Length: 280
Image 1 (cartoon, rainbow, N blue to C red):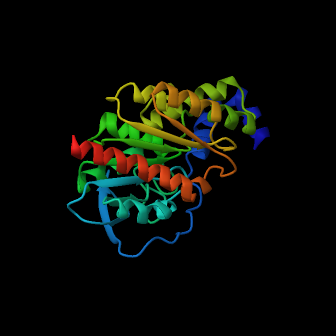
Image 2 (image 1 turned 135 degrees about the vertical axis):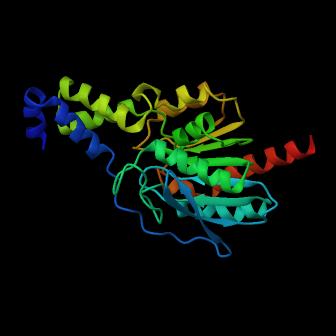
């Protein structure tokens, strides 16, 4: 594959750029379902003409907390947080992004998706269940949450970002290095990504998107050894949005979602802020 991309640098950079884009946006194999607490009700909503599926727990009169997974994940990754959020009096809503978990693919077609499709799925779920007490997002769910806040109907009182994906450009740089293509294919790739996603590459950055929405109380949690998210980028992101940063050790990118201490910090932030808001 590296040889093909090297030759294409001179012979067909446009075609190679589109091929690289298709590789990048190919959804990973669907993660196996994970156990969640009993008592949930399944639901379906339509997002961009396709079905998004999820689960909801709790009192319909309570304001929901939305749980938003990232690339290659699924809603049930948040199973460890559900009991504590319910005990704190919240309704809990989780869902699977297009081409993930139990949801159908979106407009990008079978086996492909992107962060904008995730944002529009979140917005459709929000329209079903209403204003959020909080959104708790993992990885790419961070940028998708900001896109839904900026361009959709989503509204929330507070935000929690765990192992947040801050920006995409450095990931594309790694992708280019792995495939071995040069600047002409990279330029074609960048154009193809912009056309496919509908958001300019340089704007696919949580710091950029955060500047376009009203400031909200925000908590950021990440692991120092997370190999999928740059720790320095997360530190910079937390500073840019004025959020406290909680750093863990040895949990990586996914185990962090079920760590008891992390769950306690999330619920304390969401629950304490909610009580203060209702008593004000």
